[in-house]
Length: 173
Image 1 (tube, rainbow, N blue to C red):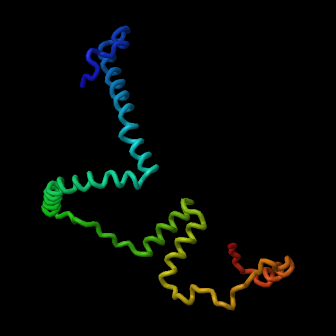
Image 2: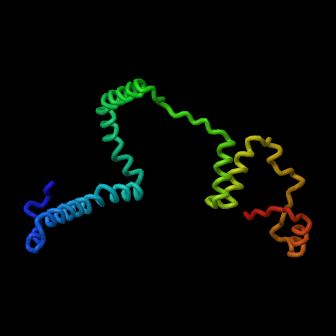
Image 3: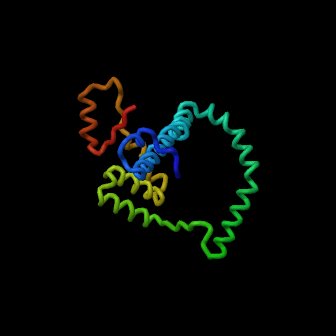
């Protein structure tokens, strides 16, 4: 792997050993090559895709269709080979996710105890799983329990309503 042959000129003019000069030349050539190519292959396509996703999608759909058409036989061949290897070693070809709600509760509980989940997030996740066992009427607020606030209502009246209903959840619109 001799990229700069002879070693990069600034290194050959110094009193360093040829081995060190070759190693530094390799590191420099690798860094320069990767540093020059990475923005072009890594950052720019992602930025362009984020700036104009529809235009990018329209431009690349036909080349992608062409590649799908051309490489479909290869994909079929490699997939078949992989399936045969899996069968040979008796490895299941699909993952079996037998996760119960109790498993999720345990993970959420562990996350809450470890401090990874905030209290609100923990309650939200628990409420989602409680929805499974709740009926629609139990989730609804009865009409009699709805307290109305008029935009033109005076401050005393509003304070009185809030004092009479301390469990009241107020939603702004």
